[in-house]
Length: 140
Image (tube, rainbow, N blue to C red; front, side, top):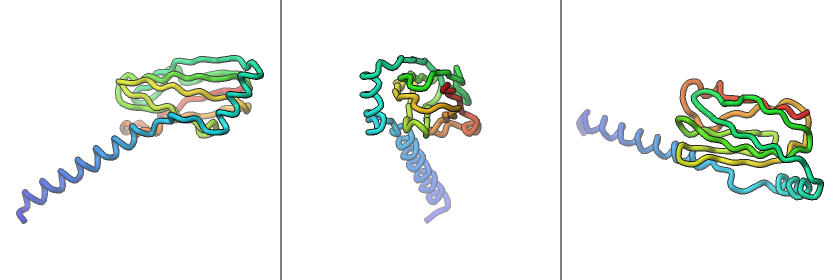
């Protein structure tokens, strides 16, 4: 096999793997709610928790706004849009990941059932500044 042929095969393999990884990253959508979140939402409807709705824009390499404030027990809805490449907004503590692409905004909902400062981050690699993408949710 010639050197050019090996290089072409290697480049093709890298391209296919890259496309596969990109497809996997953008399909990390959280479309179903966890049982814990479903239970909290049902309790929220019964307890008339206050709805707090936010519109957040993601971009390389941050969020606007990057800090949100709610009260413990609030029902939180976050709408995520992106101005450039695919991003997500992920809260490990609330078991929610909200992906967004240029073609489709994301929406997530949860109950802020514990007080504290919680960091969110992006789970879709988007470049060299990706690790700096984070925001803060303050639950008082």
